Length: 296
Image 1 (cartoon, helix red, strand yellow):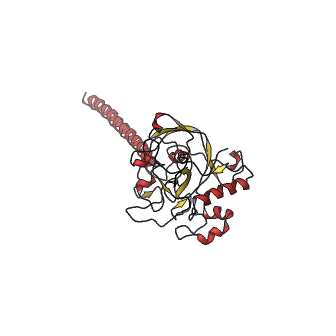
Image 2: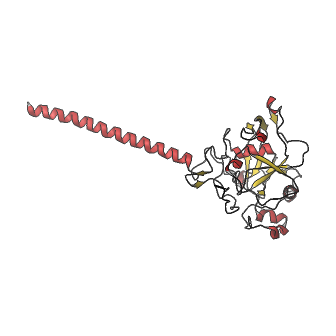
Image 3: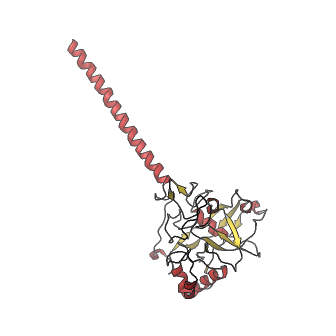
């Protein structure tokens, strides 16, 4: 009897022991999966939150001189709440358009204007760094040259409107601070972009595409260099919240043109998708470059 009772208790103990082992393994697997998910969300070299379509030349309906990404038509909430010149937030509806995957580089720009090479600055003196020392008029002339090279009507390539730029920068994310989300640009000492950290300026421009793209597959929409936009710069209209704006082009006239995106010399707050500023179209900066859009 004692032996039978002992054997029965051993079977019960074995059952609960195996059950405990199973539960521990299951919890370890769940925690491991959860940890991997968190790492993917936090680390900059993880996959973007939205899938990136790498559109090769075979998918183009034209033959572009530079790689471009298609931005589908859509509606978004433009602007922010941190600075007065970003308010009020307002709804904007845009047609689809193409935008350069990378900022225009020295090598790209000098195909149009070879003499630019002698104006290369310490901030950007390599072929694959973004072209700076570029006025708004220089950038627009490059767009016209690109139209001529591809034998399309002038205006097919142009600078992005401010609304197009912000929509593209957001990469499909809804009301996030930065093109990659709400994380600070320096997360766990992994840099998400090239900017001024702790009042210490970075080592000037990086080669285009040195950091992760946003959800649309576009590189350097925050940091590296600011980018010219088509629009004149002014405060948003106070009544723009009353209706949806369709393909807005900014004020009819002002004295400055819009820049967006922040640069290697910018602080964190200027890297936000909604951050904006302006400068005379006749001026240039070694923190200011551009990219083109194609509208048809």
